Image (cartoon, rainbow over all chains, first blue to last red; front, side, top):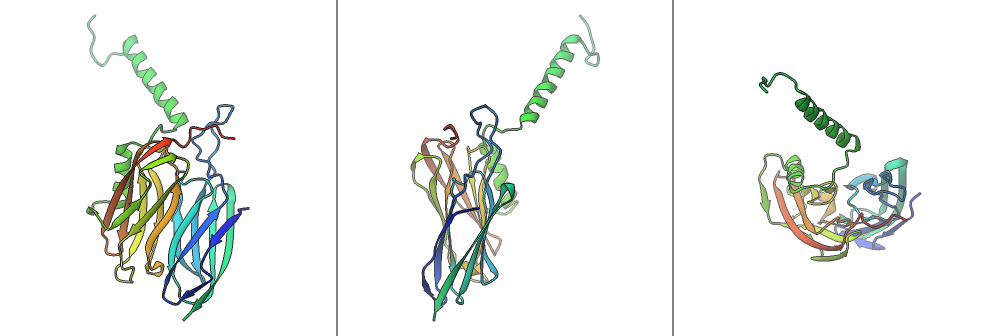
Length: 107
Length: 159
């Protein structure tokens, strides 16, 4: 399971764009490196990151082996209503992590 | 010794069979050494197609000198009103010398309010990074940045 750190502002004004910063612990093994016995270490990366805001997808990112270990992702979204943001990471070897963050919108 | 090109001599047979063997050996491992400027151009072509690729609107923020290629902070910002009528649909990032030319694709929409995405990337060598923004109007804008990498990614022993 993933160990994620998520940073969102506590309260945001309606109609304002705010930043969401997410960090998750993951090796992001590229599949191009050889181990100590000379054989290649199989690829193990997060392939996809999605963010839904009250059930509507607002952002998604397709990752590749060129993304650094412990992927940090930052993006913006416009505050519409109070509710929750669901951040989901899926990847190789059936990797899946999900975090829910509450968001309070003031008018 | 006179012979027509159709006859198979011992020499031509050996040349052909060694070529096939080498091709098979390469195919079996199938690990590309590096993405090349050609493969970079090819993957950009896959995204852009026949549309015009124009420089501007995109700001690609990368450190000019990266001490550690394993984690290089990168921010892509696109100058766009992000409205229903005119917004950035996608941001694609490519590199020149990593094993694969592809870095990431972010899908955006008017709900984002601001077309800005930041991630940390791996760089295998000092190279050029290219960001391409695709707008809802079907335009493609691009920016590129050169990064000098002191310690390349993928060289250290995994622990």
